Image (cartoon, rainbow, N blue to C red; front, side, top):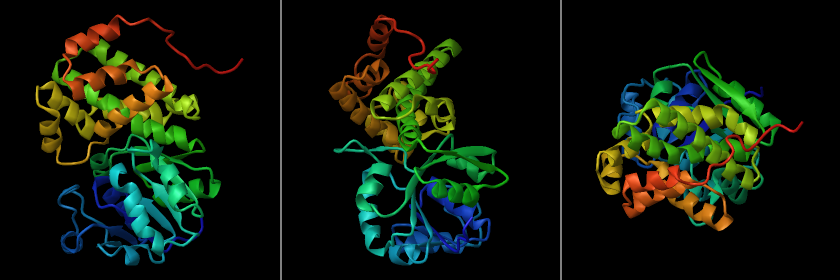
Length: 339
């Protein structure tokens, strides 16, 4: 790969921190942009991001700063690890300090409210001359911080972006696969957050193993159905960014969206569940946006519609489940390889 002398990461949350540390462990300077000087000073002095990954000791090559210009200056690769609600505004803030040769890589798993655009589309709009890509997969940040064996997917229309990110992030415990289906990879990481909420609710209510299996596989069918309507390849959902991410998010208490669902299943309000989490759970906003979009585009998503009624309209869960179980029975597998 081309020599990389500096990497910038915009966003000092859990995933942004572990990505910056993966790079810094190789001795490559990784500059992490955070919102306040106080946060930057605390990270640099303690070598720990105490709020998001308190058990991870950061490599010496990682430097935190609240000065976005200095963070971006001289960086060949820029990872953007910002919640979808702030993604565009942060990118606008960064634009004056970007040059066209810098690669922009989104790690955000969400959809922009108001436009129903994915982060790759936002990057193309705001920085049309910069090659871009997205990374997504079954990537719980706390497990990466613990050096648990993990794999992800870099998706980009540019092979050089795929290759560079693969080499940059590859380590003994982090493996990077490549894809050209940017929308498919991005939608896999985005849509699974919805179903993690449903899975957490079911877990709190003691759902059985048969129910878990049905939920995961029918969730996958809905995800691929919407993705195909937006131009993605359904086969992408058989990989890490699809079924892989869906499994880990739906079955792990480490998942933020699962924890929100679990709290809801215990009878807590949505406001209480989100406040208890203390972090952004993208699935809550994604559920609302996908419900509206699927209705507008006439995409059949009964799990999304049912969950929406439970979460936002306080519909009785038993009634919603009864309606879904009594719906028209469709084919199991909708997309097949051409003969």
